[in-house]
Length: 153
Length: 287
Ligand SMILES: Cc1cc2nc3c(=O)[nH]c(=O)nc-3n(C[C@H](O)[C@H](O)[C@H](O)COP(=O)(O)OP(=O)(O)OC[C@H]3O[C@@H](n4cnc5c(N)ncnc54)[C@H](O)[C@@H]3O)c2cc1C
Ligand code: FES
Ligand code: FES
Image 1: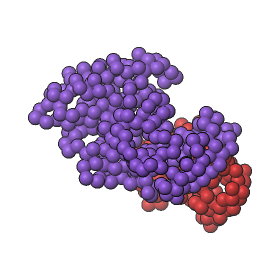
Image 2 (image 1 turned 60 degrees about the vertical axis):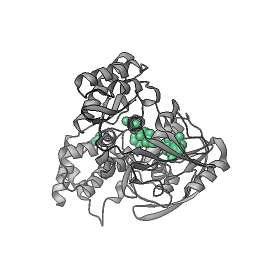
Image 3 (image 1 turned 30 degrees about the horizontal axis):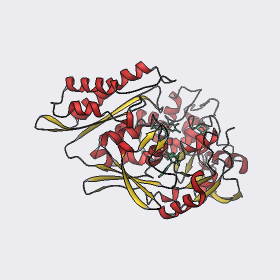
Image 4 (image 1 turned 180 degrees about the vertical axis):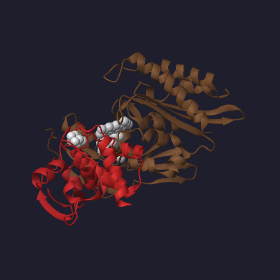
């Protein structure tokens, strides 16, 4: 089936099988390997991307379901060579160790700050509660998102 | 890597179109809404539909939350996140907020739908207990037109519902009960998990006694996700700790929980009693 998905502002047309998952479309068809792929069971959240501006777990969305829609991946956060403020927060506050969970965390953080520019710690923890980090113990991720909230205010 | 078996894919652009596609592809076709129950099952090859009819294009048509007359209508394509954020729904029935806050996680809630949750018919599904407590009515449409099914007759066994293969769930209609209180209590092993057990309650008091009681239970083998014996015990009695505790024990006696990775049967039975008691007390506190 022929689909056109706008990824990070660029339309991409491909022939795909309906059973192809969005995460594999992004990684294997488009080479956008910033979107990670972990549990494959919609639990870990490393595959999180924005679909029409809303974070979803791309291991549980078919690529054909994104036909005609807009997807943002971690590669799309940067603007004109400038890192997004949430990316800068993770740099400043050591929000990652191995980096496996980071793309999903960044996209959820961006979405949270778009809706709630000044979230408290509980709101941040709630927002990332569908995403697992096996390294940082979450403390630094929460601090990074707070840093970004303050930096953009 | 988990990959579904091959299937044909069609996108519906209206309810009649979806029904026409279901008719054309026959009983081996399935509709896909949020896909957060169906796609995992297809990846594990527990489900192998020959065709998927994507109804995400009906998100506007079936995505309403509105008070109509003396009923609250909730469309089948309402996402969990939309129900959680709906001031209309949670203002009338805080039970929706209690339950939606603990269904899956915020990212899954952006995608999963109310209709998909009910049609999946999972014996541990949270909203089934919520709508059972609220005595909702399901509106179902098929080739012959529209019919209504009381929610307490909607589930016909694990993963089996009153919706035929050629039908669509359109919406849920909840009777608006002025002056009612409602609440939901769930125990889960970790954040975002399915319930070990959960209970919902709706109460209305008139002249110092309980005039109406609704109790919904999930994950504990309660028939049709409700507890009619416990409800009958409550009606006509003054609300209070003693009546609520007794109702909890009656509800637990009529459950048939199974031991699984989420806990042994006697623990779940204990939770059925305790969570029913807490939900009733919570509902009473909100009247
Ligand atoms: C990680 C994770 C955690 C979860 N935790 C919980 C939890 O704690 N509690 C809980 O209750 N649920 C939980 N769920 C389930 C979640 O709520 C699902 O989104 C929901 O059960 C199914 O909704 P869906 O829209 O994704 O349905 P789909 O997967 O699209 O469909 C499910 C079934 O319903 C049918 N269907 C869908 N819509 C209609 C319709 N309008 N008419 C007729 N048939 C229809 C489909 O054909 C399919 O058979 C969890 C899911 C995940 C992935
Ligand atoms: S890979 Fe998608 S949630 Fe883990
Ligand atoms: S930084 Fe390693 S999983 Fe989060």
